[in-house]
Length: 289
Image 1 (cartoon, rainbow, N blue to C red):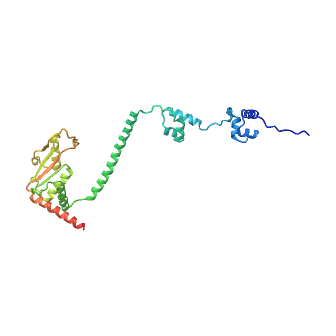
Image 2 (cartoon, rainbow, N blue to C red; image 1 turned 60 degrees about the vertical axis):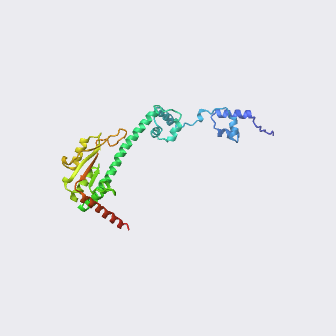
């Protein structure tokens, strides 16, 4: 019996077989099994320079999304808008279109303008929201006060005077009540205090103190309405000379200057205010022990 010899194919023959199998549509795994090639590196050497047939390429399910993403980016869509439209992640969109310039991209100046406008609209609404919250707290707290008794008015009035009124100095005693303030509400409260304390309305003298560049006549009319006093009880206004170098902020229509209230023959009242304040301070001191 004649023996059959098994010859090992030459590298050239093996490469020719590998190329032929590849061109016939065989996969790399199939070629390795047919030729008995053990390593991927060896197979790559045999197939070096060859191109796989189109039949071996699997269609990419995201090719259409990729193409559509690039179309939308070219139209000026943002990453977020494209991701929402196609139902994919922003990272995928970035990978697909990051090499494309965005058509219609805003200039730096236009970007700053829109950004500033957005902040302005935000804070405009935020200020209204915060003001409403502040006002709600103020209104709720004011309702807790209720009606003040005359004793409470005297104590609070004495304290208001001690904070805002003209007081004696160690080197000069006047013992006279003079109160100056720009708050209409506090002026009304002080007049109520004077009424409860027993000051005669005809003993009150009012004087508007205001910058000479303001509307003095309008300020006079404003304080006359606030006090309800006759015009004969108002003295000549005290005008503060205008300094052009000073940047004043109280120049709006709501600026009415200050009102000075002098009480004639008020030595008795001034000494009572001193007594009320001493009593309240002493009582507060005893409560802290």
